[in-house]
Each structure stands twice: as C-alpha cells, then as structure tokens.
Image (tube, rainbow, N blue to C red):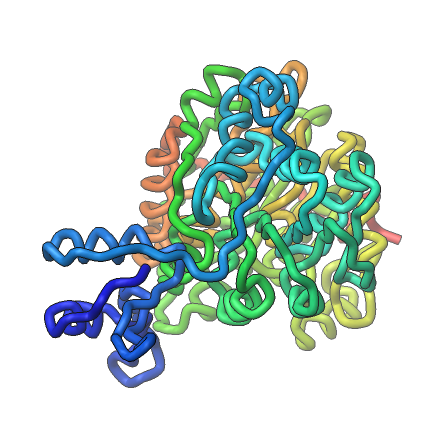
Length: 497
C-alpha cells in the first residue's frame, strides 16, 4: 500500500505501527498487543506507508474509516499463471472432483495476494496441495510442513504424481522445482527464487523462528496456508500468521462437509470426575503432574473406558507428555506407546524397570524413528489397534479407520481442541462417526476451568457433546482396576521385548 502520509495518517500509524510484546506484573509473562505490522518510510522525498501484504485489508479498512484517501502498489509480489486448460470450471471439477476444492485452486492463481484456507481435518488439504503443484507446471513451489513424518508423506504423495520433486530436512537435502521441506529446514531454501509457498498447518507459522525464516526465504513468493485452526495461538501470534499469509478468505463449513459426506461427524462424551483432592499449588507443572499425569484415580478411569472399546476398533489415547504416557501404561500394558522428550529422571525410572520394558526406546528416552514409522504404517493400515501417544500424532496423520480418541491431556488450547480430535474426522467404509472421550475435572478448580474451555470449543466446532455424570463410577473403577492390576505382571503386552 502506498499513500502520502499526512500528520493525521502518521498518528494513526504510530498508534498501530508495531506488533508489541510487553511485560506485565513481575516481567516473567508476556502479553501481546494486536497491532498492525507496518511502518512509515520515506520514498522519493515523501513519506509512505509500508505494510505486509497480508495486513493490507486491515490497514486499508483503518484508513478508509478515517476518510483517508490512498492508492495501492504491490511491491515484489509474483503473479502466478496457471495452465489455462485446467482453469476452466469444468476442467477444474474433473481435476479435483468437488466444487469447493476447485474454487480453492482458482484462488491460488486468481486471488491478488496470499491467503489462508480454513478447512476441517479430513477435508483434503493435502490433496489440494498436490493439485496446485500439478496445475502450475512451470513454477517453483515450496511445500512446508512442521513435522518430519508429514513432510515425508507429502513428498511421497507428490513424487507419485510429479517428476520434479525434492525433499529438504530429516537428513534429506535435494532441492528441485517443487521442494517439500520441514519448517525447521526452511533456511536451506533461501538461495532459490520461489514463486509459491504452500504451508500445511499454517497456524504454526507464528513461532518467531518460523516467521523469520518465511520472511527471509519467501520475500517475493505468493504465500498460501492451510489449517483446521488458523487462529487461537496461545501466544497471541495470530496476527503474525496473517501478516505473512493474508486473511482467511475461504472457510469450509463443518456441518456442510458432514452432510456431503466429505468428513465424519465427531461426537463427544465428557465424563465428570468429581472425586479427588485439588492440587494446592500455583505451579502448572506440579498441578499437571499430580492432577493429571500421575493421578491414579483419573488414569484408572481412563484405562477402564479404553478397555471397554470393542477390540476390533482402533483406539488412540492422547497425552501431553511422555510422563503421562508411561503412568497410563501401568494401567494399560496392552497398548503400544509413541512419545519423545523424556526427562533424565524419568528415563532413570524406566531403566529401573518401573514401567516395564518398552519396545523401540533409544538411549535419549524417545521412541526411535524406525519404530515411529512402523507404528504409523501399522496404525494407518488398521492392523495396530491400541496406542497411547503424545503430540507427535496431534496433526498431519491420516488414520481413516480411527473411531475412538481419548483426550487424557487435560489442556485447554483452542488449536489443540480442534487438531487433536480432528484425527477422528477421516471417512472410511462403515464408519458413521468418531467418538471423542474427554473429562470434566471438577475435583480441581483450575483443571475444571480447562475442561469448560475444551467443551466450549467443541460446541463451537459444531460437535455434539454429551456430559456423563456418575459420582461413584470413578471410585468403583479405581478399586476394581487396582485389584486387577495386582494380579497382572507389569509389562505383559505385545509391545514388551
């Protein structure tokens, strides 16, 4: 945007000129001010307003509301020219099979700036990425994904369709016309002139290192992001994502997608846990450790619900830490485990045999890459039925047969409350819906507040929520499970060496 800057305009810009962090209280916590990323700079002797292309609509609206006239000039942004034969409505429908996906393909070439697509998990974002790469046969395209496993999946998918595909990250360093890279390896792409950036799980682009790399590597590229949760970052950096990619200009409605059969509906069963002493601390880690991770009453109840799931149906339990995975494993020795980043103290406990012997554990306390790849392959194929996992499987996995997901983590992040249950929305034969089991932790006021936030997010997502309240169920389960565990040796399962 270019506009002569008057005194009025300058005061307006100064009011919203930077994206600020400011310390509050004792300075140990940061709050974020939702300000525009823009600045006033001289050009040819006159001051002009310069802003990120992604924030153009915000700044333009602010200027217009203050009756300030302006002209627009887009600096250093490439325009994409797609294959004309594929851009007709009929050909696009034949290319992707659905009108909504065809519309997104049209936006990639026709929309004047970058943008974000907000679509539920299972809608087909990865498929769209592949179609875009096919639609632009002469452009240099970078496809970025936060995780190594998802990056590899996208690379293999594109390689089956297109010859000129390379991979960067996770031990690979092959740059081609189309290159798939992990977010942490983006800087290796900086010496190339990219036309288009496609960023999967774009809500993660707000992290400082990722945002800085995007700004450095893709200065002139058109940036398009995909996510089921483009807003709701706990650090308040949603505006950074918007500055880099632009606004959400296409949102896929959940109810419409369910009605069309594009995704499976999600039904939530939230079990109330009333029994138990509140954790008297102001330290989040201590509260999580004793209220969630090592809470035997809660863990035994989770185990009871998991064991009640039919044996021929897949069940996935999601935790936030390796510590919680291992303490749940004491109650569920028939489950396979996937986690990383174990603390040294916890690793010593594993070596002492406190949790049984765990298959695929490396010397650092993580499940090995080979074991993770094997588990993912087996779970995606439906051959592996029972897994306890950390956030490694929160996003970017394709578990079409998964029907049951238990959220044991007890966290309240809006993004996590969309992404994690989203594993259930994949469509498969005979699958009428996915069931999400969660908990209302009434025994502790802080944990109860988190539960309320999760349920509020689920309802906002359009999911049906059923609250199950039985004050004696949890205690009875704990007594029964504890008696049963005394009779069964620790680690008597298929995943013990």
